[in-house]
Length: 343
Image (tube, rainbow, N blue to C red; front, side):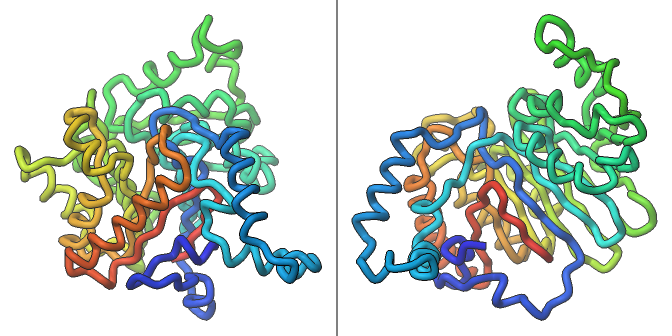
């Protein structure tokens, strides 16, 4: 993991070196972090990154492969990589063999390639897909999800959504996609969840949900293992002082979370000019995390029109605000595609 993103108490501590000897019980991996629409780097942006790197490099930095690698490791993530590209998809792997997926944005296509190296590639996989809502950026990758085409795989699909199966299938009707949903070879089980009613996956994992404010409604999810490890996924959510109960409900589901994934698409100015669009800022995320005693906040659902340097600025603003909020122990991480975290 790039150390420039693992910001703890204002320093660039590398999480992997900090936790090398610890046991991990949940694996968290980000496959899509862009909000609203896929937004990969343009050729001009990549050229700009290369130009800036070459201008900074000295002859000693380029003398051999090891020197080049060391030089690259010293650079901020925005200079050598990118935060976003694909839309929302986050994977949680539990200690008990559950593969949990939050949302099926375009990032789920890359997740498919990874899953095919395991039981899903042999038609022996079981997956649990939780949908926060059915806006296009959260489901548009599913028709390209290869495990769904393999006989023997079982996909459990959940959502606090009325007529979930019918609505989810409809994205693959003609003329919108060349393959009909009924031609998928895996088996499917759709479960319409009740709001705020938890469900269990086996004996050791509990999933809660909480209603959020977003056009046409969305829901947050928390995953808690029997050993107490907890991850919260809260995207496409807007909070303001006109509805304090929503804020209190968000704090409650995030209580003592080890990882809190939050929609930080907007800047403070965006929140004012785009009120009722259904998104939040990192400042709100820090406030909720602080009240909930969450351990780490992941900035997620990045604004598609913002480039990597702008996202870096948002992270820097978050560091400053964290100090104002009086929560220097809260870790802040800018989520990027491919980021893998062990808890």
